Length: 322
Image (tube, rainbow, N blue to C red; front, side, top):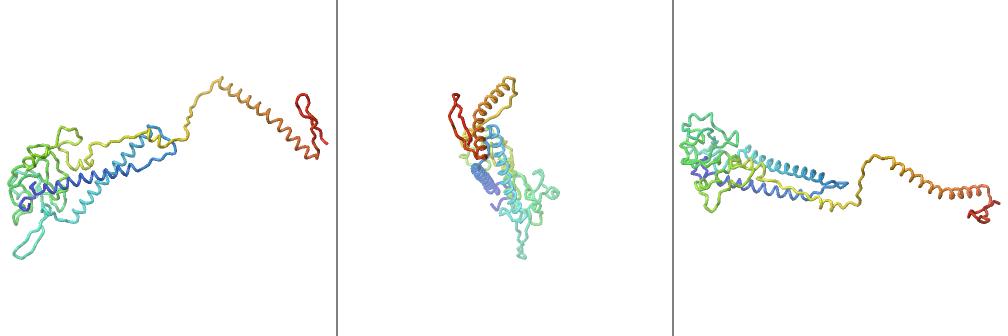
């Protein structure tokens, strides 16, 4: 690969597809792990909630899980990118910087890559200093990928500007190259892989079918990989809750309900009659017992002995004190 230019798709393709594979694997494994962890959680309530309340709570929990999952993946990816960029790690593909040897004094120095920003048909490199993106300042410098028929590095004593002169043999639609394969892949699209002719140009086997642009998708053909990665390559999130299973799992011991109703005259009289009847019955039982209790208590206080003579014809007992 060392004979290819830093703008050449043949130099970056393998690394970029490895990056794309890793992004897909990270998204799939992260989502799977977070869903499994989410399903182990329990929702505890002191009362059984209604179907509507349960569905609202489940939707809120799922949305929170989705947001957290996406944010965590993007945070880790951006952190790794910043560490690589700020550490000044040199790409093995010579895309962000490379070593130049001076054979006269056996010394080496680092040359930083710069990517031309503008129309690739411009051939006069001496006027491009104001249209260059320097890899020492940012890692997301990119240029259109293609098949370029010239050396990997600019000649000696020439600014290290990756400029397409002469023009490429052909451009790979949607694919970008740049300082680092990771950043250029995120800014690329996969539109070439929907077209059989484009796949033939870049040497993809006939056994590999192109992507189907007619399949319904929320991601368009020209959607960047970064946009898809922001959504973890997920077309839709499915969410379903089973209220019956939830209710059976809770198994409430009692179920009650209350309602407020304005009372009427008939209802009021019925309640009063019930209260009076119940009160009369209770007093009829308690009064004789209370009278007998107080009589016994009074007799003990006086030191009298209570004798029972007999019952009168009405069934009442007769007592005398001595």
